[in-house]
Image 1: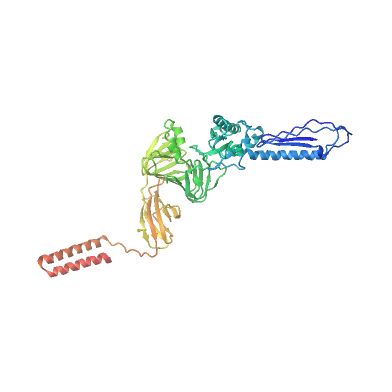
Image 2: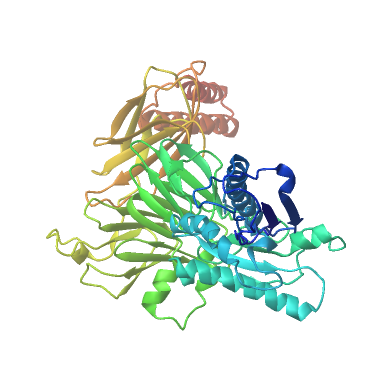
Length: 569
């Protein structure tokens, strides 16, 4: 029995030669191993198995095949399966797909016919794993970049590298991946990853790389030299539980301190949870409990703000940096440059900030009725009314210390008819009166809230990321248990609609070693002290004018009594 076996990585074929006749009885069994001849040819990155047809045996058709022949056939079948697995590993350089920042997927030269952009037919099933990976991450856009070695004509190499990238793109599109999510590039020999002086190096350089893109600006998540794209922001403070999901992740995960954020991140806070996001220019977003937000990035609005030729609808869709689905969001914009803009999108409004002032801050709330309640605390904001409001299509200019409600036209509460309204008055903290206070247990707080509901926040740091107390109070008093230490106090008034005032801030040192300050004396004591000083001064002056020593003594007594009252009382 003759066997001819050749291996080719991109293709597997089994063929059987015609049966030769053997002299002898029909019952004769020829199973000598010496008669089996094998010829093996190995070719790098290619596999083909060809098995010559089973020889015929003279005699009855029922003549059994020898046991050795059956064993060889089983070994060949097993070998074919192993070679398919082996070839898949050579098509993809990575066993696990990962398109997070700094990561890429590499297709080797074995994925294509020799010197061609055509995908090997036998390897197309291998690409279904890539299709499944991208289908589960529908917000992830990719770049497919073809690369070549430096042998031959440079223009032809560049053209072939682009054609190979286009072939991969065509396969993905045919299998359900949206064409709008994919861009292709042919880089030729610009970015080698190995030495082109060796055959092994040139083989590595002939490749196709798949790299993730930032969702809005389309930047590569990994540079040609392998460095990850710098993040848009990071989580600078957090109170669990906060869930987070990026464009390249299939499932939600638990967010943690210093997580890096890129374009198109989704965030969700649970009960009593919150987080701060700090951008590269030190602007900060505070997302409160039970909120859902989509972070597109800071640079996106600046990039798209110049698209003045777009329609207003397209522009408002493109320029958004943040999309707030529900909950409370505090925006603190810092160090804004002349070209910077920033926008927050809700279901029925588009709130834009620009560089009219270097800093801006606002509170945006999406309530249970999906109304947008916007309080501008610093700078100015332009609010575009989108829908669910009689003013749909209008742009509202909101100044500092003013607010507006957008949406909820059919709710019957007529809040939108109020238009732009002033924010509640800032609360005044009355007690503790001093920055240094004794340590009664608990420490009493008292403030003038002007009839509004007040949020009292006491934190152990100036960033208000480590709360000791954070609660809403209906009246103007509260008792807070504070151990000795340094604290920071913030008071904010909130009206019945949900508008918020400017915050009152104060630092407070609680220490049992500080004596209580004596009570302030009524104003008339200060008047008496002043009159005694005047009388004493006049008496002393009169004693010199009239040469009367008695007036001098009277003046001295008045001055001493006045000074004593001031020091002792």
